[in-house]
Amino acid sequence: MADITIKSLIRAGPHTFIPIEDFHDRLPRFYVEGAVVITVDGRILLDEGQWDLIDQLWCYLVEGLELLARGEGFETFFPDDPAWIRFRIDPGGEMATVSVKTNGVREARAPK
Image (tube, rainbow, N blue to C red):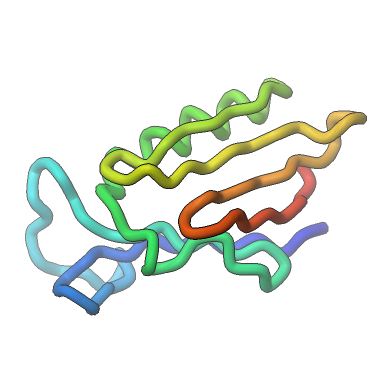
């Protein structure tokens, strides 16, 4: 079983990110800036360097995870950035490959 960690961070300043569980201010109603940090077996796929509008990014990711659960692949661009994230089901249907393209491509495999 793969060790998968996902964290949501709110952007509180130019180089400051706060874990969502520690953020106690009011969020803007729209356009919440932040980062989704995804690590699979110690391999960092996303970090604070790929911050964007996380309220919208999470909507895209949830849609992708629903498709993944049905055995379908999924690809989406970030809301305000040309970066993308892709979920592909590997042959056999038990494993999935997650790819993220920002300045380069990062990939990891995990059980679907």
